[in-house]
Length: 392
Ligand code: AMP
Image (cartoon, rainbow, N blue to C red; front, side, top):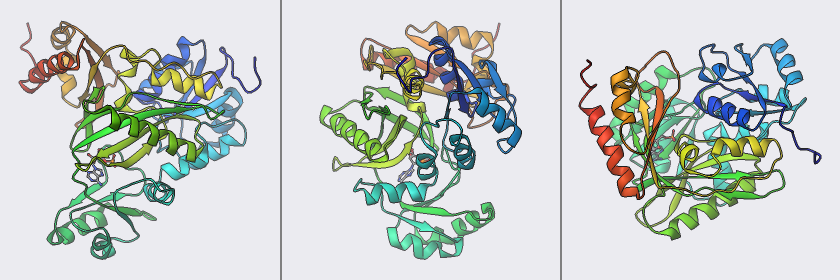
């Protein structure tokens, strides 16, 4: 094998065992690798498909030694894994993307500063060190605004909208009540975008990169609900997004799979909302309609293998199954109704407990045209909205 290449048969380490870790594990197993999953939650979905399970605290030093001894390379399935753990593992084995990149990305203030100082367009923002400075900080970006925790927020958690100055006291109180020691926040201008877009980019250690088609996303209460691929509209925007994604990840010198979440403004401008240093929910369609999925790319790139060809084989709509959406599907009849829709590909994550806002699975609807895929997704969504089908 070429130097630096990690051969099939080796053990790949992944921090975090949610659905992204599980899909990475399945992709790695298909390529002949073994995977060690480290996630403190013994019920985390990836443990059921891993060769080696580490259901232990991320601060356990003995586990760290065992894990580092076992694996050839380490990656992570989301950005909120402890950066100190990545740094410690990096002393022993390669971590891809690196802990330095993780530390920039997992802190929204550091990430926005990185983007802004490198000339990339982001919504106006200002750092907030203490809730009692909320008013003066919001005045720097203007109303309406949004306050977010600088770290550990996801899927709209830890976010407060501030439409008017009169909302300041209520939001200040809410921020104060959720505050933990050393917590910081970022205040952003609330952007009136026309639509939300995202794009995946893969970059190898040799600096080669490739992008996936740009997609359009629909969110509900800060959580991704649906993704359309390819994003409707002009191909000039898609070209602009692809060039931007490559420039950002080049500037980061990132090795791995990244996703840029973008706001498309009525002026045509693209603003970067955030960067994910890992496969992304809006890229799940790649499992069913691309020559090489985002998870296989993650395996290839961390192992020093060539990047896979990216080709979209069919238009598609990906619909997330959130909270109670899964109730009828986890009963036989709802599942039968869904699987009867032509072009519907179901992924259930095997989570035992259904909670509001929890991602339980997703469905990819394929169609010869995007219009047909949208019709099929709508047929299913209408069924979800009208409640679970009668049993019997
Ligand atoms: P985030 O956790 O930053 O990805 O935010 C979750 C969702 O909140 C985004 O997908 C947007 O729908 C919305 N959002 C976040 N930041 C802004 C912003 N500055 N302006 C408008 N909407 C936003």
